Each structure stands twice: as structure tokens, then as C-alpha cells.
Image (cartoon, rainbow, N blue to C red; front, side, top):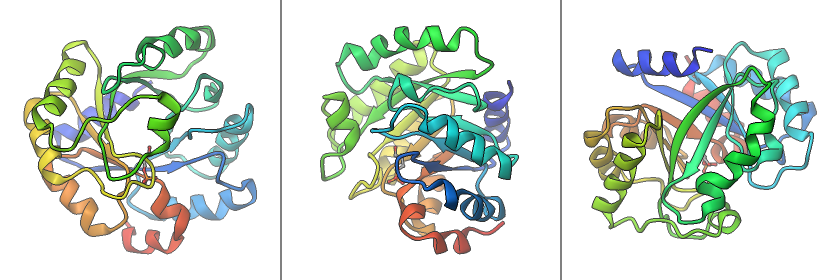
Length: 240
Ligand code: 1GP
């Protein structure tokens, strides 16, 4: 149970981290081996597994298959309680603090406890902020919450800081899967300036340049899913 500690150590050394997000609903089991071999040869440091609409059992099957082919930590990024499996290494225990839907602030978490109580998963409390990106994303649809507008900088910063002050261990700035606009560097840098905990940024990042700009602005860990789903040759630009 040292995934959070390792993230912290990397942040202290200013080493940047990259998570490849795999959606169980979109990844074919027969493609896992070749996909993960590309992940292994890339600069990726983590594999996140999760999605908005995933059938029961799919996540566990996928995690088991992924773990056959890599030693990278596999971290659950669950859209719902049914995606929790103790076959992964850790879980981002996400509270959607940009929204005001009690189910996604605390309700689902209470439901999750019966699954987490007897598992070996490392539970990492994460403040999750959905930021408006130009189109409605599945997080907005599923959670029935409104994202924070991009120009509400102080509100974004204060929300992230409130998460830290509540004792959350990570803050995740989310533009939404397949977002039209990734989180702008100036938002990342404003949030990072106020935080003492690691900052995750994801949603709509498609190029190496966007990755570098987000790191430079202060992202400690970047999450990318759609760009790899759409074009696996993106891994060629991110070789170790
Ligand atoms: C979505 O932040 C992640 O929850 C990744 O987004 O699929 O757009 O890379 P993309």
C-alpha cells in the first residue's frame, strides 16, 4: 500500500507522472496484451481503470488481464460502486466536490464501504472537480451536476483548496473524457499555487505538447484515455 506515498515522493522530486486510463466498456479483452505492451514501453507510470457505464464484472476481468502483462500499479477510477474490485492495487475514492449532488459527495462512498472493508485496496481520498470544457461530458450526465465554468478561477481554486483542507490526499481537475478543451494551463497553475497536495489533470489531452504544457503549469499526474483509444500510435511519441 504505497501508491500514494510513491506519488508524493515523485512530486517532491519533481518527477512527472502519466496514467493511461482504460475504460472496461471500450477495451476488448483480446486487445489488452498488445495495448499494455505499448503502455509498458511508454513513459506511463500508472494504469487507471474506470468508466461511466460499465457492466458488473467487466472491471474485474479487465484488471486481471491487465495485471498479467504489466507491473505498473493498477488504480481504480470508478464511475460507480459496481466497478470496485480488490484485484486492483488502489482506488481513487472520488468525491465530486465541484458538484452539489450528495450521492457523489458522500452517498456512493457509504455504499462502497461494504466492498472496501475486507479488501486490500489502497484507498486514496481524492477531491474531484469537473470543469466546463465546451460540451456536456458523461461525468456531468451521470452525476447530474454542473461543471464549474472555466472563468470562475477563484471558485475553482477555493474548491480545490477546500478539498485539501478536508483532508483529501489528491486533487483531480477533470475536463471530462473526450473534452473539447483540456484544462487550460493558467487554471492548472492557479490551482497548483495554492495546493500542498499532488494535482491530477485529465480530460481532452491529445498531444505531447499539451502534456508538456500541463506539466509545466503544475500538473503532477496527467490522465489520458481517449487519445490512446482512438490512436495507439500516440504511444510512439511517448516512448521511455
Ligand atoms: C477522463 O480525465 C480522463 O475521466 C481522461 O480523459 O479520455 O479525454 O483522455 P480523456
